[in-house]
Length: 467
Image 1 (tube, rainbow, N blue to C red):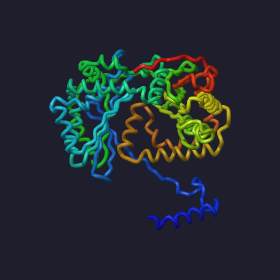
Image 2: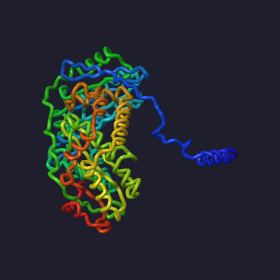
Image 3: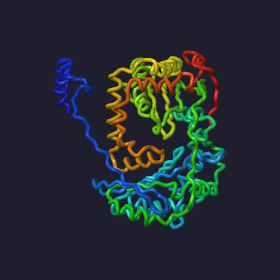
Image 4: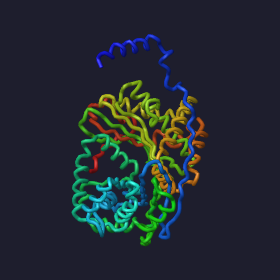
């Protein structure tokens, strides 16, 4: 190793002395265009109402099952927030009418199977991956979880204790606390904004899980995808064998889209730490709406595009005032959530807050440069292609699109429609959705050490966290 150091040093000196002629800009390196054809996901319906999706992939001797259930935390009864999450957790860990929880765990461990449950605001995901040789048994075990859960009391007590402990630790993670409270403010009175607390978790008992399960877990509210090393005929036969006998009726729960926040205001969450977390945003267009493609690109240019995005580039790269800064956009059918954020030292809080406000305001007033548009289109197109790298990912995306009522050609025409976005589209959606006075802002930190008052950005209101 030591003998190689002089040679390495000589090489570095040589490259530096040669100047930019050898150290080319990575953006200028030629690469052939990506050619990608989106595989077709086959969709059928079981006789009991379950929608079945299938996409074959013989590359590895693996098979995946993905289940989307159209219920989530937004449907928690008032005073029992956290019920949907606990239902999903105990669905996985609480055994079935035929298998105790320990027996289920042993079988899954023996097969080296991966099974997860993820509860979101409006839906619940169950995912599983099995070796090809274990597919039949895997189908059986997953059907047992979904169709015949036992909701063992001991597992519920354990899950409640773990959740209460997790809630107790929320203040230890300032960014988590800030985003949690920001979404509560953003959604307002909408059920999506209600938060679980130690009290609401303690209020939940086993009969609550059973009622929640019966209200949202039934065939007409379930989508099932089978992907991997399994053909369409076999997938249909297995799905019918293990899920086809489930015949309980029900009406899928639903909520109207949330309204935008009525406007403005600064919400100060005091915490005696040397850093601040700043979050601002709004309820905006969803991916079922005409403005979706332009807003997707606008978010990328503003903050989700990394080093070259405006928020990251200005606040972190140029000013060096934040160790994390950017934005994100989460479309959900008829609406979406946009947020811009920064994490900075206390004595830069007011300046960073002003910088974020200025960048968002200028996005609707300052023309978007042609190179920004070209960069964003290329990056978003490439991201889309690489997000379609697995059969299970493609099938899950197709299920999600159907759940949100997106058109059949949404995925196949995504790149084309991103390519059609113009500078005028970007300026229009910015003015429409990111008006300065319409976006609430949350600031978490020690207000006594800020570099300036926050009332320059709106009426300041102190808030207390809920956990």
